Amino acid sequence: MTKKAQEVMDQFIEQKGMEYQAEGLPRIAGRLMGLMLIEDGPFAFGYLAERLMVSRGSISTNTRLLENLGVIERVSKPGERGDYFQLSADPYVSLLSGINLRLKRALTNARQARGGLPKTLKNAQTRLAGLEAFYEGFIENNERLIQSLES
Amino acid sequence: MTKKAQEVMDQFIEQKGMEYQAEGLPRIAGRLMGLMLIEDGPFAFGYLAERLMVSRGSISTNTRLLENLGVIERVSKPGERGDYFQLSADPYVSLLSGINLRLKRALTNARQARGGLPKTLKNAQTRLAGLEAFYEGFIENNERLIQSLES
DNA sequence: TATAATGTTTAGTCTTGACTAAACAAATAA
DNA sequence: TTATTTGTTTAGTCAAGACTAAACATTATA
Image 1 (cartoon, rainbow over the protein chains, first blue to last red):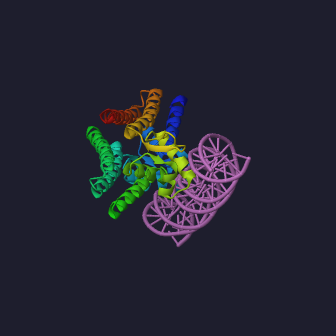
Image 2: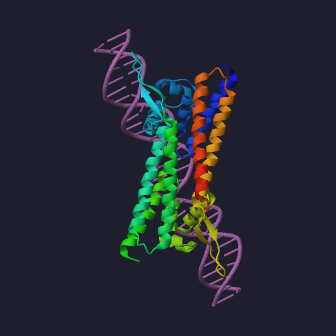
Image 3: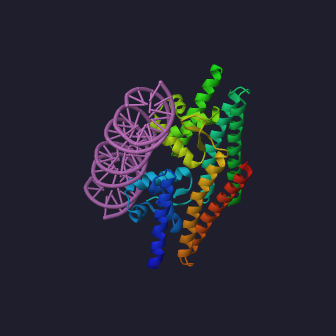
């Protein structure tokens, strides 16, 4: 491992941390993703804490978060006591599925509002229909991308 | 305006507030969007504060936030001193453009990392390529949706 | 001139959540 | 049995940000 490669890796890990933070997620969750993208797994629980220089509590919390998002999974090694983690088989499919879940909820809200308003409120009806069209297009895009990514 | 219609509107406004909060944005920003989607604009600054029962400072902050996202715009009325706000012509196009900006930054980060790592790190190269493919697909989808929404 | 209205900024409060250290429970190893 | 190890939970600290009230600057109006 050259020194330059190490630097590239460390920088990538920190960048992923900042990207996650910008999306409203914990920075450590992003750094975990960065690490698991750029180094070969599976990763021991203790290694993650040491490598990222954070507490075991933070590893516990953030690995669970990423597990719930479906982008990593907890695995075991025969004869080993500790937990290991690795990227999911289709991390981006899981991610897109989660996004679509929230989008569908918002779409339902919009439809219910439109249905509950009198037809005479033309402008509101039109704006809500536009909102629905946006959600529908976005959801459909995601579903198509899921198809194309599914291995 | 029937009582039921009022309830549907109020509920929609609050739902939008919660949706925004779930995305890591201020709840008031979401309530502003909900209001502007369901009532006819343009909306006077003071009306927004009264209708949503929040301080003028919060209206000032959150209208600026939504302006920066490109989903609403500040307008003036001839002969009137106060500011008015209304939905942008293409609010979702602006939204998608902002998303794509961040995605493109992340894509650049991934490409730079992959380029900076030795080709011999086969697995890292493969995972980064997968990440790039995901970003590229997502970006392309958004661009297509932008096209279809553009009025 | 005062007086009022308008939007921004500032100061301060309060909540939330990210994070750590330490206690803990459970399992293994000595 | 007693150590250790491992992951979770708890208690507490710290920082960030959402929000309000009030001060402020600006502009219009009386």
